[in-house]
Every structure is written in structure tokens, then in C-alpha cells.
Image (cartoon, rainbow, N blue to C red; front, side, top):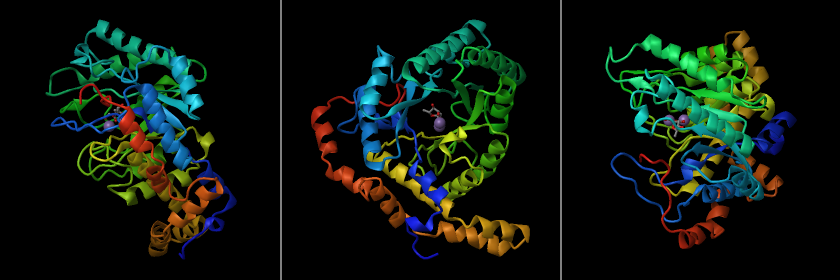
Length: 394
Ligand code: LRH
Ligand code: MN
Ligand code: MN
């Protein structure tokens, strides 16, 4: 394929690319690290208000990051309506509200699956508070990820824990407002090492189907065993209308939370191909595209800008796939042609096309260069002292 321009896209493909919106995680702007060391970054936000200000910079230069997810209580504030106003004044919105039931001593043996009913009720109540935060901030998504699991065979009954989980989730689901939904994230290991209570998409889906229409699965790209075919899971969840959201990041070994598209850009392209094929790029599809990343070494705002441009590049390539020719090659079992059609799109340089798209929206062609030239980084380094850690545990 010769270097494509904006006019190489169909009208519909251009519309989808223009309206693509990727949600940023508030915690990407806080200091984070490994269990060995947290290196602090000068200019790191000191509270949720400043995290929103940094997120707004990413949106200002990319035009594609208009929402921010919060993690409660990492982003605890006195007045959530006031935080919402702050976001609106910055031209952004509050996205998913993430519950945190993994950093309290009471949850040592689990939260929603804990053998002790009092602790389960405490965890359910935490989620009800998150629903109140959603109502105050205008958020529609309650995102649940549980650290629940066991370390040793026999430690607890796997089956009874599933029953407790179903019962706790039901209590949370019943507290949702009419325009609110529950999205359940899975992860195959960590921190639990023997079994995890929501380890895979199948378990998450079974609970969501049981709960009802307002429950969907969250797919975090870093939460699978190496070699897992993630795009298959995407296709499968889209088929049954239960792909609620992505947590995008990339990984080499475990849940590394590196910049999306950095470790395996081809995997990201294959995922975006299924998204485009399944019609899930449309803002009305109900699929939220969210980043879940940490920037331990690199500068945080530029790290998020790179993430957005990586997703845009994978998306533009997926939109350039000649779908008619692909369908024809697939129908006639022409293996090599079908594969070549996909690879042709993947091997296309879409950066000039995206630069053109940005300019057509009144943005700088190169968001990274424009941000670095804006002086914002120097300003926050001078103004902010004592930035906040992304998580209490790190
Ligand atoms: C768990 C997880 C989940 C949490 C986030 C901080 O590994 O992916 O989404 O909310 O990390
Ligand atoms: Mn995640
Ligand atoms: Mn994770």
C-alpha cells in the first residue's frame, strides 16, 4: 500500500477515527514503581485535581483523551461534585470509577469472596460508596477488579468462594442506578498465586450473564498467560455483547503496565482489527477504551501522549484493511491472500494520515513535540513539590 492520506479512508472510517476517545487513568500521573523502588518524577500531581489537569494536557494535544478514570480511595476528595466541575472546566469528563478492596488489612483473605460475612458486607458497602461517587461525578461505569484468591491448594473452598462472589456482586448490582453499569475485570494471577476468584473472561462473563444486562466484562491486555490469543477473546465477547471495556497496556513478562503498543504493536493491531470488524469502534457501541498504565521511568504526560498515538496508529491501520477483498479471500480459503491483506494494512505508515487528521481538527500535527514545546512540564516542575504516589502500596 502506498502512503495513505486522509482521503484514502472511507467516510465512515474517517468519522470513527475523528471521534475516537481513549480514557486516561488518573493513577498514570502519580508516582509508581516496583516493590524495589519508587522513583519520584518532578512535577508529579499532589492530588486528584492536579491529576485531572495533567490529563487535560493529554487531551489538549491529542484531541482524543476526553475522559479520566478515578481510583477510589486513591483519588479521594471532599466534594466529588466540585471535582466534576473542575473536570468540566478543563474540558474533560470523569470516566469509570474503580473500587479498591485490596489495600485494607481486613481483605487479607479476600473482599467479596471472604469467608467472613462482615468483611463481605464491608466490601459491598465500599462499592455502594463508589456508586455514590459515580452519581456525583456523572460517571456511568463501576469498574471492579478483585485481588481475591488463595495461595495454597485447600486454603479455602474454590466453589464456595464463587457462591459468595455471586451473592456480593448481586448486592452491588442491585444498587446501580438506571444509567449505571458494572464492569468486571479478570486477571489470571497476582497477588494470589494458586487460584484467583475472577481469573479469566469466562468466569467474568458467567457472573455478568447471571447479573443482567448492565454487567459486562473488562479485558485488561496485561492479564493473560503469555501466548493467549487476546483478539479471539475480543471477538467472542463482542459476539455476545458483553465487552464493556478495555484496560490497555503492554507487557513483556507479567502485568507490566507498560505503554500500550510498546511491547507488541502487532497484537494491538490484531485487537483493533476485531474491534473494527465487530463495529465496536463506534462511540455508541458501549465499549470503553481505557488505558491502565504506570510510567515508572519515563515522564508521565508524554508517556500518556505516546499511548494515545500508539492506539490511533493501530486503529488507523485496522481501518485501512480492505475488508471486501479480505472477505472474498476468506470465503475462497485463499490463506496467503487473506493474510497478505491484513499484513499490507499493518505494514502501512499511517503517521502522515494521522498528522493530517489532527491538523484538520485544528491540532498540531505532532502532539508530542507540541506538548514538549508548550513549557507545561517546566511549569509543573517549578510549581509542584511532593507529588503523590499512584498507589498506597507502591
Ligand atoms: C489490577 C489492575 C486493575 C486495577 C489497576 C490499578 O492489576 O489492572 O485494573 O484497578 O490494576
Ligand atoms: Mn486493569
Ligand atoms: Mn493490571
